[in-house]
Image 1 (cartoon, helix red, strand yellow):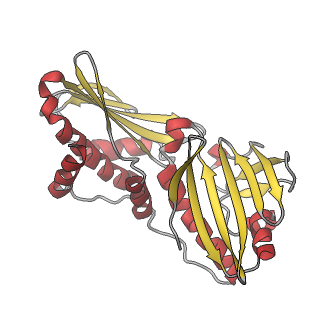
Image 2: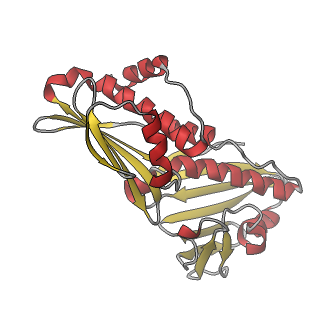
Image 3: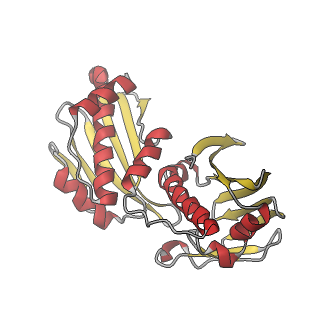
Length: 290
């Protein structure tokens, strides 16, 4: 198995996977285009016709928040080589390349939705890894065990793609440090208790459960956590630290602190994994931001 790589196509972030399959192109083509076969590995049930311009409908068994609408379109059909379609704001392209007695499958997803959509690339890459494993098993006539640990692969891709990094913007009074993390459809009502039970805060200046928490950081400045919901892209948490200009030297430490705090919060909120605070990790991140 080869893992996902992040590239850019016409300036748009694109996940790319490549799998060598020991099956003829015609067999693989059917597995990636026939709705009856797609249901064995694709994350949603697909309704469509195999012709350019045909509308597509994607239905999830549990995530009704994003299903039910004909919000897709077949863009290209070049049997048995290329199948490309739009799914909501993303474009998926599946290419089957003959290779000896088998073929190579190149699967890519161009991610729409701007910065908010890109934040989900970690969970998306982990999800497609699992789906493509199921596709290969279906073709081989075997099965793969259901994945139980999603935090580890998502955290890996978040790190690989730099999705956990914070940014610094100079302001008239100092600096604004910003982070944002995808929360994989976890609702604020569920993630708020995870945040408040583990967070050590200074003087609270604003509290609006389960959306906003703002307080003074012990070493200076104001920290704001905000949970944001998007009906198409899911849930995310945004953290903003307003740091006075007189504390400019604390920028690497502050960035490292919030980066690690968000790593731990993400693990606890998405997988119920309460990991311990690591000073070694903070020191590593201080070097990264310095």
